[in-house]
Image 1 (tube, one colour):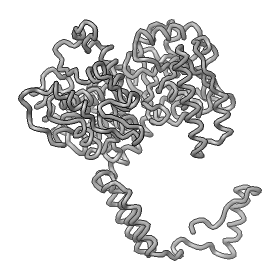
Image 2 (cartoon, helix red, strand yellow):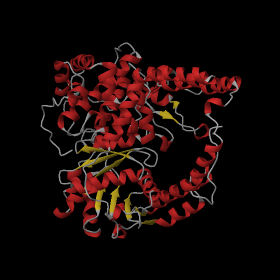
Image 3 (cartoon, one colour):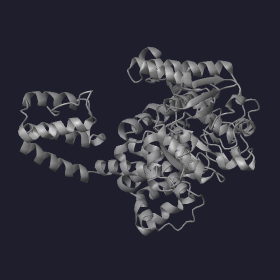
Length: 561
């Protein structure tokens, strides 16, 4: 046994500790090393557990080492020696280095400027603050759930009564599920239910200390909402947008001058009640106090907040556009299939989901609306190409999947994959999509790509964009980008994040070499044009991490991050 006794309900922890200390003077407590073990039972248990572990080369090196240590534990001395040897193996192993990098990166990313904000109403532990969420869709209701769990009173507003009721139904259904699984007590569920006040009127946000909008990704709609918030909310209320790509400065521009310091981005990832990451987006007029309060609240609600600059797509999505865009090109060129791309990224590289699985989960229409907002898509009525597409390399495959086939993803039961509720959320290869893709394939096809070639075509543009983001000052440090990708996009923690991966597993010289090859082969894609920061690191013969540690950054930081 590992525990000798338990504190009784009627005694204090100090009294219990004192009692056991006095007993230990008279009769020494048993030591773990003296506990006899059934070696056969240990071996059977380890054999059973081993079948559930990932392969050593697929992120499981450390857990397999732990299993070896347990097998050796039937003899205490041998077990201790074995554990020490395995410990140092893990320390030196690339997966161990990557995991330690991620561990410290999370803590570094969440450090904010020291400010005296403890007495702010939103951070009070004595009185429940009231906050508002606009939009009762999947994202809005998920954010509402997170805030309710953290102890806030929540006003959930949606001008569409049907959408509002659907959002409330989701919250009630989730609460019932949590009670059934023992995650919440019935009393907690009842308390949270009372803290939720649904409404169809923005004027019901008049007493909110914080309001976050999570509506359709349209600048006109968001600006209209913020104009109203400027009028109906308290003067010092935080006004936040959950936009995933639009400019925070453009949204804040409709606010009065004195309200703009209280405006920032609060970008949750879908589904908001499950995903750990939140990008805290700094606008040009966002105050340090607003950002500091947001960082504290983000911690309070159990999320990992990373401060990012206000650029197109911020950090995560700006890099992700290249990733998903190039994945579509592989289909259109006929050099890969939906399944081969997802399998390569998921089962070989270790991503939680492949790019097409992510599209179906988030909703393929989300990416389409973003491209439409940017003026890239073809007009459905006039058939005219978007005014901003110009000579850029572009495939309409992803657009047509949404507009012509109506395949939005899980919500419609079909996306890049087919879905059958009887067998769960696992995608089924779609004959309709396979046939549809054939229309885009060139007459003369290239050879099918290997998994290695698929990863390079898709992941190197993503890494390159990360370099450009650092170059422009929209991320404070490379490790912040790694945190965003581990906790927002399912990057395997045992690979340390995209920037760490490029630095330590691939090598920057090779990344640069391949990007230059791709740039010549596929003109019109800016994401293949190497970042100047990447070129500089290769020229100096240093890793990106070394470049930052040695203060060799020769660029003026353009933001206040």
